[in-house]
Length: 266
Image 1 (cartoon, rainbow, N blue to C red):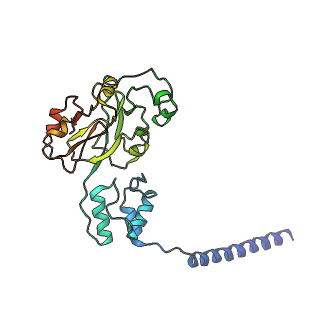
Image 2 (cartoon, one colour; image 1 turned 90 degrees about the horizontal axis):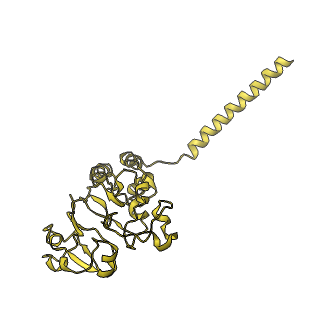
Image 3 (cartoon, rainbow, N blue to C red; image 1 turned 45 degrees about the vertical axis):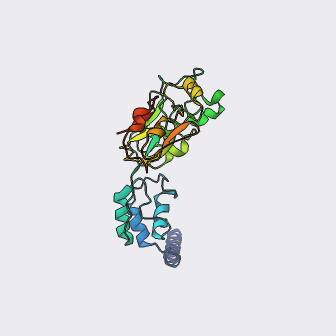
């Protein structure tokens, strides 16, 4: 009797398992989500970093947007032009030429050039400096604090703190924009890879105030703007900026700058 009961129980379990399997198979067919083949192909073509630099929730989000026509085929900043061309082929369209971008830190106030109000020994995190007296120890309210919040979010090892300020390796940078978003001083911006002259300062203080805080800060004198033959340099809020679309890379602004804050980058 015991053996018969075991066999019966096993048979019942087996029959139930078969019915459950059949039910799940039918349910899978009925409720199967149709997958866009182009979307899958686009997703495979994307680099898979899921950095969010495109403005969408990861590569899957971007792939869906591209497949639906919501986003351009060259939207991925990490993949750049090669990936854009591959996706354009998948979508059957032509990819517009895009210029590579890289991050740039608008500050040259390193440990030698920038003054400090006090010695700080707390948590090394730029995003926490709002709770520190004076917003941090540096005399310049606009300068890089050098505590590496940007370094921590960079997935490509493209940014490091060197002598107290963040420095970007333009060859490694993929222009995902995470460092731009995390910087509490808004010192980092994306510029064309081909840019040759940049203003390494973001100070909005008047010249005398800037000079007391940093040996190399922009004093807003306007000499650079006066010597630019194509009006690519302007001075706003006591700080010079260069319109990279207008800049012809002549270098007059850099040679005339009395504070050497306009730098030539390679």
